[in-house]
Length: 263
Length: 221
Image (tube, rainbow over all chains, first blue to last red; front, side):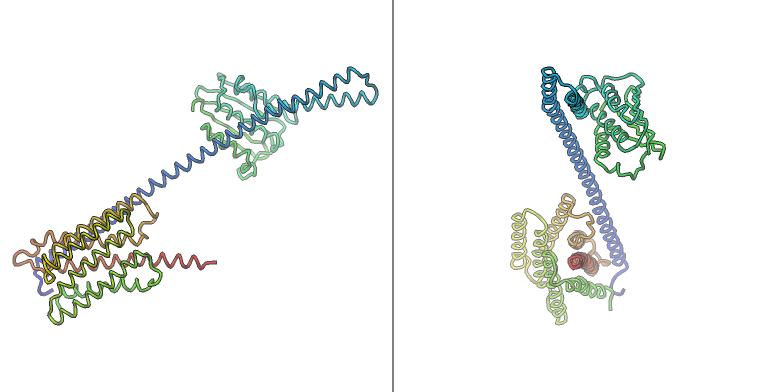
């Protein structure tokens, strides 16, 4: 390196190294700042997305509830009233005419069909929207649901422990819908002989257990991808409830729902 | 041959690396890379002309001064293509070019190194680079920022002009006394030019990869 003094070479080396170091450090700092901002932005977007999804589910469930109320009211007020009117008219005809023989049998059969239809309308209407829910609360409604389903191919037992709370708000209705869906699943798919619904009240949470002695189900079962299970999962998410499936294949299943009593 | 000449020739030759990559994607370049390609061609022509003039022992400062004005204009246009506030940028472009032309024509003259224009160009381009980085941090245009050609180009501009500005500030110290001479300044300047060209080459390569991958994906069945 002729022509350059030792001092100049040192200057070049020191300044060159310093420049490279500054460049690499600046580049690294910029990339890490960028990645940090990108992660923050992605997290923000994820939260917004989740929030949006939650709102969509909420509005879906709300509209489901509104629609159920409307159908229940229509069933009760329209078809129910018409059936009552038909029954009254036929009863009036029965009083006016002295039916005998085959005619009387037919008259009695018609009355029986009408009674069954009125009962069905009442049952469906109640299941769609338990009109007394907001008056009777969760415990009584679940008890009523169990007694309605009891004896129709399965024995359904309802048990309750702890200090019962008169719980009747929208969260309680969500919990009721979950129990209703779990019971429907047990009745329709589990081929169970007996079902036990257990409510355990604690100071700050309610433990609901639905047990059956049916065929049980695995985590990959179709039921878990169906609308019913979707409803259960989203409703439990909305009331901050934890759901646990305890399965014992061929020996039934037990589903535990832990609901915090204050949101 | 002396060490400083090796560095000078390597600095002069380093322009070939980004130019070669620019050749690979000649027809399918994005607008900002086309501006950079124009700058590289002008840079090569200016270096070649300087080499010829040096051979005949003629003054080469006027080429450097004119090239610096062209480089400043093209780089401001390059940043304008990436940023908002075009009216403000146009005003900066016109004012700075006008000042540099006045300087080369009437203030410092064409046959000496236009230090005043150089300092102003450094300040303007450093500001543009920093504003562009701020803009990137706000807009977050891509997940993998390291694949963005303009990031490498901006780092090249910042390294070169930031380094030159620093050299200008410490010039008196570097050229002071018996141990110091202008050689040190020029060696460091040439090293900065090599780094700048390598970073431009990386930027162009990133652009080339982007164009090639999008062409391949459009050809896929």
